[in-house]
Length: 302
Image (cartoon, rainbow, N blue to C red; front, top):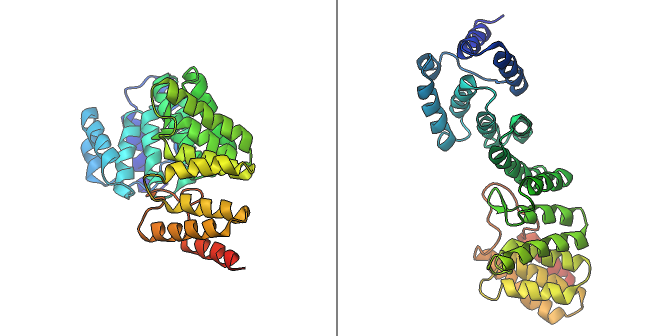
């Protein structure tokens, strides 16, 4: 056994020394599942931790807001697990250190551990909504997206306005259905969200992505007039490359080549001016690039 590994075992034993046997067994199991790696046990952080939990929590909170993607952040996250390896919030934060570094498989493995180990509904929901968002945008796992959103709705008594990591949960579910070619069902979910917005006194057309992807589904079922109305609403005040491109496609499909050219030129200008999907963490579905515009332009020439 290496000296570093021996030190790590001693550290874990020290952190858990005040626990009863049942807690030790539970924490040991979770720690084994998490498989903490790349620890620098000679770090001053670990030397200063000792038995001062408040110091450990201070470092841990610091790591949540700073030092993103760095190995140092992972060391700080590990302190939280040493304080309480069964705390689902600590496990979830530790998963972020992988997520921010692009190691999504490891991040999701730990996120699932945090979900399975949490019994308090509010915290469980925080973990689930982040999982649903990741399933859709990073893993392209549409079945688990839908399953997770359904679990969230069950825990919230069908709260159709609930958010998943900043976006409506129903938007995530409907986008997953759209990607699975379940267009009619996706439209039903979009309309469920819009109806709920109206009931709460909000504008049913106020969420750009809900309207956009509802229109995308309408294209697929050849409900072109409805899709045109939805897309036209979105660009009535602001230009957008993706919306103009989809309008150009509709008019191309319906042989109105004059309007198709107009909207394609609008898409090209909006794209060059920066009016396009801007996502710092992931590539949005149906994002338009220059080559997409050029390909449709060549079809129009024919």
